[in-house]
Image (cartoon, rainbow, N blue to C red; front, side, top):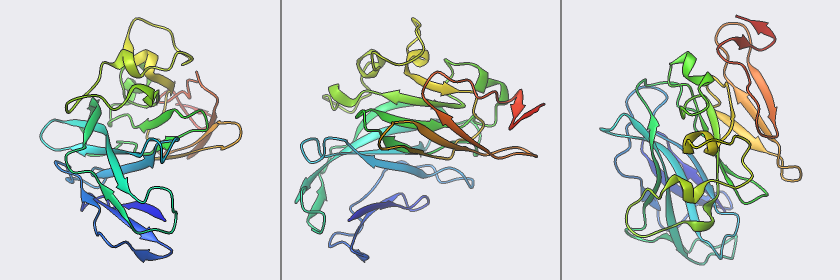
Length: 235
């Protein structure tokens, strides 16, 4: 079975062996901004310790706030059988993890959520059409973040203190929590990336401007150079 998201309807749907699940959609994520081509419900993954931690992580453009959210739901039902359609989103379980990711432009939102073999949550964020922000490691634009979900969820609607979700082995040391959440930076619009299931390396597809599309390999701590570099070219 697989969880499928639809960008513009903001629906999370369950597909089991090629067929739509019994409950369809599982849920419609509320307050999703779908204006422009690159906003909407953009990313999804599940916790590494599923079904013990039956949490679903989603990344989306939030309406009315000029921000993008990383949030989570709790699931219930038959959590262990990969062929079962008995999966339900717990009503009222939406919990916000990050609510201050800038979304001033309708494009360059990034959009991938992946859980690595280290059980950390990785999130790719575009430069929000603000090129130079990608060189500010504390800016939450043009970066990939790495979060530790071990202390989540918490009470209320969130978000938790960022200090509670910063992995101790993240590469950038600072008093600034955004910097400490950052895994790598200097990216334009890392719309999609994958995590090697053995090494944990990230392979990042970064959308270019005029001349080059980039495929970047990250082990943490890199500055991939945007906007001063595009592929091998100095701009």
